[in-house]
Amino acid sequence: MKTAISLVLALSMSSFTAAPLPAGEEVNPQEAFINMIQKDTFMYFWEEADPDTGLVADNSSAGAPCSIAATGFGLTAICIGHSRGWITYDEAYDRAFKTLKTFRNTLKSEHGFYYHFVDMKTGKRAWNSELSSIDSALFFAGALFAGQYFKGTEVERLANSLYYEADWHWMTNGTSLICMGWNPESGFLGSYWDWYNEGVIAYVLAIGSPTFPISPDCWKAWRKPVGEYGGYKVVYSFFGSLFTYQFAHAWVDFRNIDDNGINYWDNSVNAVLANRQFCIDNARSHKGYGEDGWGLTAGEGPLGYKGYGAKPADRTVEDGTINPYGMVASMPFVPGQAIKSVKKTYDRYGKSIYGKYGFKAGYNLDKRWWSDGYTGIDQGITVLMIENYRTGMVWDYFMRNQCVKDWIELCGFKVKAP
Image 1 (cartoon, rainbow, N blue to C red):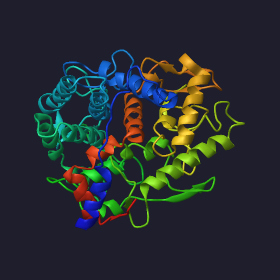
Image 2: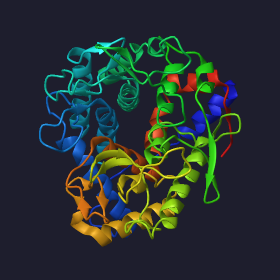
Image 3: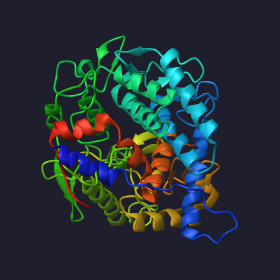
């Protein structure tokens, strides 16, 4: 097993250079386009975060609370911003340090987990939100990445100490599954991470925890249903939202990991292609759908935030709404189709769908609806997955964490040569 871990580390820790595009030199137009999207989207995390607390807004509307998940994405995005020369080392370090100090000294936690939404300045619980296992996990992933990026500093110490306090065993509530959350009024929620989806990242961190781990057998406890659409076989998520096949992959490099015959990277590739085919097949029903209008995922729509999705899935919600980040964050999986479709979307709809922070939250041609805002977690997956497409940088740093190595070993995964 040690040999397998050494192999996955070698595959995940290759050197890279994430430099800004050269000034005054001729640049490939496609690379310049991708760089523009990533930089514009990155600015959400620089400008829509409180400069004193480092907390990142859930969305761009006035008075929005902080989303701890968006803050986790933001911690990684800030490091990417420095690697590309958009901010200085001191600016990036200061923002990461302030953010982690806010979690350490200001935010209230229970058994090491944090409330889903908190006030941007005071850190107090907002919207009567739940203590969220997945949103805490996304924060921890971002914090651990920042710890590796600023290795040997107070940022690394703070990141590790916050992660070590999470009592994952408590969050199972005596079961073999991680509960979705807890609130002080009624205790544990009735739902668990019992199906393949974005919750995978929580299991990675829980099994690999050096302080409050759960059994590796818990990895086998959640369901892995298999379906097929358009000739693409997929271990699918319940609603079929594309983000469920993307979020964990933002940090964890699944490309060469085999889970008893399942490769989750290949699975996400198939899920993306099935999603695209679903939109092609339903193009007569919705004006925006087609070979360059796809990527059904959770996001803002005409009637509010919904978990849009595509087959194969047990239950899908779709009404013609497209959230562009679904396509953009698919670049690592299907670069040819994703980049072409993203460029077509940009060229067709211009300022209606693209603004100061990149692609806006969503649009629906059937209802002549266009979002005028941005959502933090959409922006986060965009910045991270573009970077993974360009350099693999996020995977490179995150896979160095001891908890990830331990997760691989404890679950007995096979690591395939590339």
